[in-house]
Length: 68
Image (cartoon, rainbow, N blue to C red; front, side, top):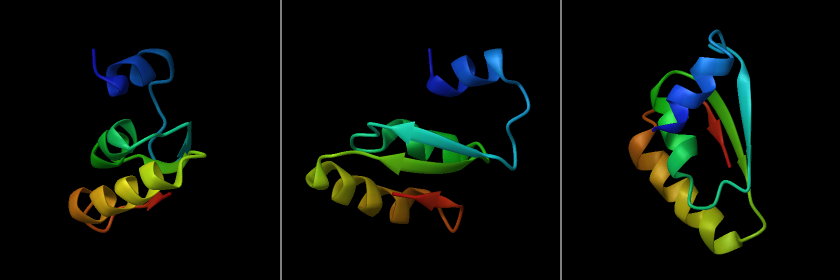
């Protein structure tokens, strides 16, 4: 099941709010959240993963709010 299904199951109205993804890794879930209209912030201790996530966000997020 995709992460968005889990989130919307428990908290159905998160649009226009920020979601914090602690331990975002390479940002796969983070980018999915942004594509569905959520504002998302990703944090991870691995700089290599953060660099990957930033690169992916630039390609996938298309001017949507995402901070890594």
